[in-house]
Length: 197
Image 1 (tube, helix red, strand yellow):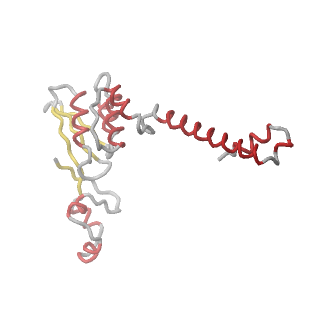
Image 2 (tube, helix red, strand yellow):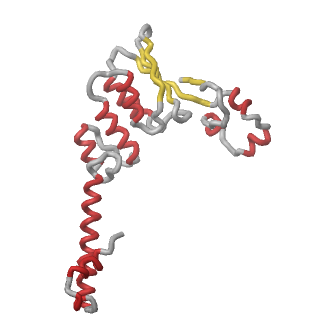
Image 3 (cartoon, rainbow, N blue to C red):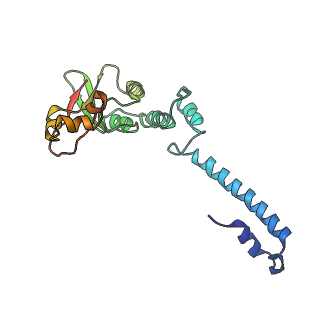
């Protein structure tokens, strides 16, 4: 970090460089300037959703989103981004953009014209995303009412577990619960993901 105190002393006549009083004075002024700079940077961060903290309340007010106490900031940011991205004509690209703004948001989107539905399959991470309710609510606000939203999730398949070539002892040594095993992703190429509702 820049030493403002020494920079300030360079602008003064040389005979002040040995003065304890002037050194103390420029040191206090430098501290105050650093605090001012940090405050300005903190305010600037509130203008951007990805870096906002205490400014998220204002973003939620702008977007008409009710404030939920105790909700993690990253989930609040996702809801705000979704609200901003969801304006305009709804296409598969818009739906993908809205869902991508959420944690675990990498998805495959399919249209089923005959069944009047949009199938959203989460492929970024396995299992049910922690903020699925927010995703469902955001999509319900932008997707036309006559279309059904079908959410699917990816899980570990037996073929993938077999391809990992683990004995039961090795599998037990991993120390995973059944829920953790369902979303585990062993390293091996070429197997398709199993989806389920």
